Length: 186
Image 1 (tube, rainbow, N blue to C red):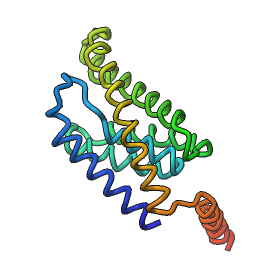
Image 2 (cartoon, one colour; image 1 turned 90 degrees about the vertical axis):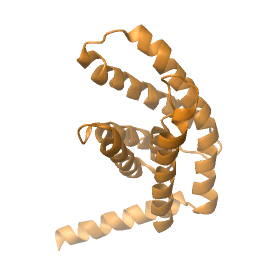
Image 3 (cartoon, rainbow, N blue to C red; image 1 turned 135 degrees about the vertical axis):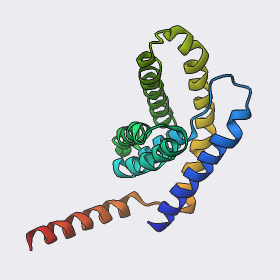
Image 4 (spheres, helix red, strand yellow; image 1 turned 60 degrees about the horizontal axis):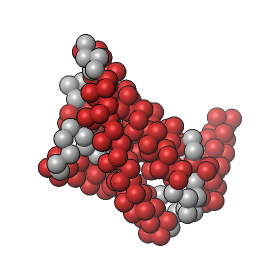
């Protein structure tokens, strides 16, 4: 469990540093890769709803603290994305690459549509075709390419280095639920 927490925090810090320091120098126009969204989606899918929400909260807080005028908007969006990806946890298979890629694309699309609604439409900019052609589609392509590289790395880290065992986690959850139940009763 401690290995998973440490690996999550390290991956979030590395992704945040790469996203803020290096990716802006890529010649991609307005489109950028959202590595924190990738981390949230992947960890939610591989670890479940709770881990997806915690990862989303940490990633969203990092964005809120450093890039947002107010606190909470990115956190809320990322927590929901982590939770929704975590709902697909029971479909997680090591060898299947289609499901996580589809979840990442769906999450990125939802995020970009919310971003357009919150930051463009509410500021009276209704030019969706310009937004879609200059930012949304290139960002989806970049995210797909990045997911093809990042997902196997995080999967290797999760399965081989951390020695993740889903049955052990299920037993831990059951033991935790039983101990909470005992505390409530007595």
